[in-house]
Each structure stands twice: as structure tokens, then as C-alpha cells.
Length: 238
Image 1 (cartoon, rainbow, N blue to C red):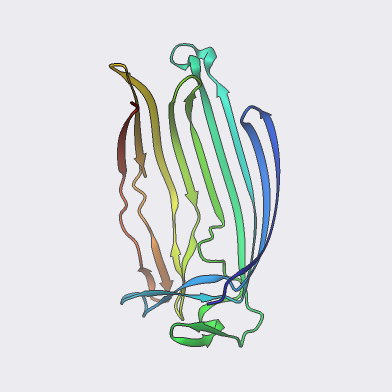
Image 2: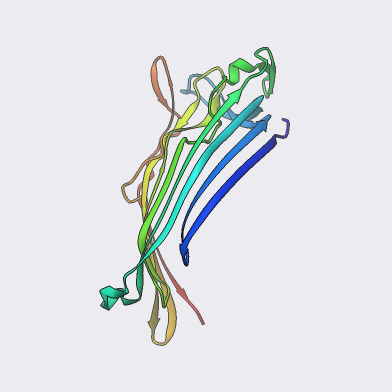
């Protein structure tokens, strides 16, 4: 295994509306020599599968990120909202990456010996773990005077390769959209300062999907039910 070498370029522009309200745009570019990628060894996916690692020859990665943070004062609503603001946080990242194979006759060292680069890597394939589209959106309220907040969180990622195939199709993950709800609030019980928190993760029960596809159809490699997770916490300060 050879250590990877990076050329990393990044630029960012930010505009502040006042306070923490801001919008930012960033661009990035990476040139990678000998990127390390996980390789799956096994049959057609129906038997035992083993993961190892190998160096791809070269890769490039570039993209852009847009982020917005903005709070809306709700004090004019009075009552419960007198010390609250509606906070919106949005982030979107587009990324494109490509493997490059300068020498089609090169050999790649693996745990099963040196093999032709074309058996493991293909010109133009994306890097392992890279989704073209990643988006996060949060909306909720926060209190100005004390710890009290409640947020809905939306997290989306498009399909990505999780493991490179060894003379087989790559293993693909489809993360999709996951929605969470989190809240926490200060309490005062019998003069003891408390903080109550509640988390509801994966509200709609999005499952984990990892699979490979070949001429015979789709083979599930690491697909399983995730379900919805609830967590309640109570913190006391003495």
C-alpha cells in the first residue's frame, strides 16, 4: 500500500447579513495520486465477502458548496414566541470525481497478488464514498434567554460507491433522505437546574441499502432495516 498524495485547492466567499446570519459559497479541487480504495473480494455476492484495500493510480475531485444560515425574530408574536427566533440552516454540496488510468497495462498490488489495473478500476469511475449530491436542511426555533430549541433535520445523499468490485460490479449505497427531530430545554425542578432532551432519529424508518447489480439482477450485500430510534436524556447540574 502506498500513501496517497494530495494537491488541495479551495476558495470561499461569505456574506454576513448581521449576527450569525450569513450565506457562503465555496469551491474545491483535489488532485490525488494513489488514492486508497476498499476492494471487495468474493464470488457474485452470494458467498462470503472480504474487504481489502488497493491503490488506484490517480483521481481528481472537484465541486462546490452553498450554505445559508438565517434567523427570523419571532418576538413580535408575543407569548411563547417573545424570546424565540425561527432558525433556518441549509447546505448543499455538489461533488464530481473521476479515477484516471494513465497506463492501461499497469499492475495493482492486492492481497491476492499483482493484478491488471482494469480488473479493479475503471477510467472515469467516481471515488469510493462520494455522492454527487449532499443536502442538509434544518428548521426550528431557539430561545434567546435560555437553552430551549427544537429542530427538524433533513439529510439527503445520492447514491455512492462503498466498495470497489474485484472483477465484479461495485457495491452501491443509496442513503436517500433521512429525517430527524431533536429538542432540548432547560427545566427548574425544586430549585435544581435540569436539561431535558429528546431525539427521534430516522422518523420515517429509512432502511440501509447496499447492493451490487449485474446481468442477473440486483444482489443485496449489506441491506437491512434500520427503524426509528428514540432517545430521552435528563441532565442535572449540582
